[in-house]
Amino acid sequence: MNPEAIITKICNAIDQIIESSESYNGLFPSILHPQTGDMLMEKPTKIPGQRDGDRAHLGSNLIHDEPLLATMNALAKSQSKPEYIEAVDRYLKHFAQNCTNTATGLFAWGEHSFWQLIEERVGCSRNPTGGAAIHDHLRKVPLWLWQKLNTFNPACVQSFADGLDYHWTEGDGLEYIRHANIDIKAYLARGARACDFPRHSGFYIFDLAFAYTQNQRPEIREQIQRYTDYWWEKRDTRGLLRIESRSPKDADRFFEKNAPTQTSSLGVSLLESATLIESFLPELADQMRQYGLVYIDGFLAAPHNLETREFVSLCECETNRIFERMSAWGSVYGAGTVCSTAVLCLGGWRLTQNEKLMEWARVVGNTYLAEKFPVDRVHTEGFKIPASDAGLTLELFADLYDITGESVWLEGGIELAETVLDIYFPEALPFGASGIDWYESQMGAAYLIHGLTRVALLALSRTCPLAPNYTAR
Image (cartoon, rainbow, N blue to C red; front, side):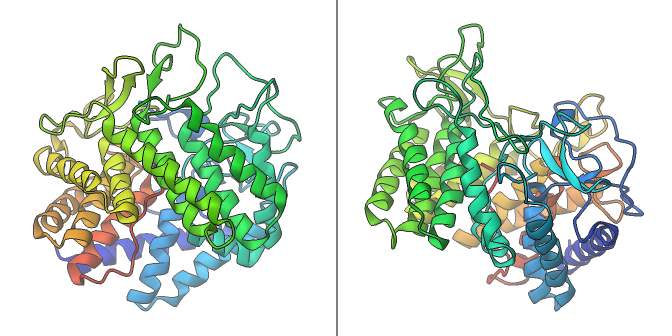
């Protein structure tokens, strides 16, 4: 596959998406016709493993679009397309100045909420008629995006940081939840499960750390400390963290289960946050680094078996026995594929130079070299592969090549690019999953675009203008 041909395909898709945004103040609609780019007014049937409560029908979701926007910034420079930077800035300026003034300060983005494009209001897939919109971060917000939002509306960054207080719940002692109200200034009541997933506190810590670099308010510093301390005393002797701190016994998948990738996610977020605040709060930055390294060691202490390529999603707290494994292809809600964890390992390696993280990523990379994209199952009823699976595997190959210079990873990326272009890209816009015929941001189309672009640009030059993306954690 000619890398220039890949870039051309990507640029054609971006041109179509920019055209589609013209009617919506530069925001990108989430669900589009792959040929015309028209926003689909009728919601397509969800694919297996997808929840309607996570989709952004008739809306735009900045968390979904972030890898696409980063790709556009890079291509603007490498392909001499200044209109791409203009489109990114138009999107983010409108969002920052017109879509962030909510009751709590939390944004309409992430897992359940989005900006409703028809009525220009906060939308929520769990409450489509309006009101009671729920904030859930979904993924880590990268530094460059916070910097852009701060450029266009510094007040919204500080308001968002204040709004993270609404992730704490009512009751004795501190307990947070991954959900929070957006348009209601009220804390959620505690349910039977805590739903205080470790990775989410890492997202909040990074958000707060950036806000603190802009305005050193004591209440933000206090929130950073609270979220940093939250999981430390809950870790086990290995440094592993539960998937949530409180679960009923009948919640079998959650009760007394450790979550290695969630543990690593929080660890990497702490290391990144420490870099942000070290010149302002050096003692807290040192604490973050100490905790982050322990959590990464906890991830490595889970019962993964690299020789047999068994990658642990969940393990029992007391025995450390494997409860659930990660697969290579076919992610569904609540069970991601191993490529995203391997990409995060490389993000952790860049911060720590821990060779065990590199070994983990290499083994997963070799797994994908051996376990090719299951082309024979593309049209199998009930089996759909979201675009994110292909995109994050391309990200893994690209980053392994970027770091090591070993040609096997670039060759694997080019081979996979040829396959996925046939399956996902027969039209101007990529399909959201194998075996369907529409573009959908929630399925990870932006990761597919980002991954394809990274592979193509690295094939053209070892100096890649598009940075790796570690937000899927």
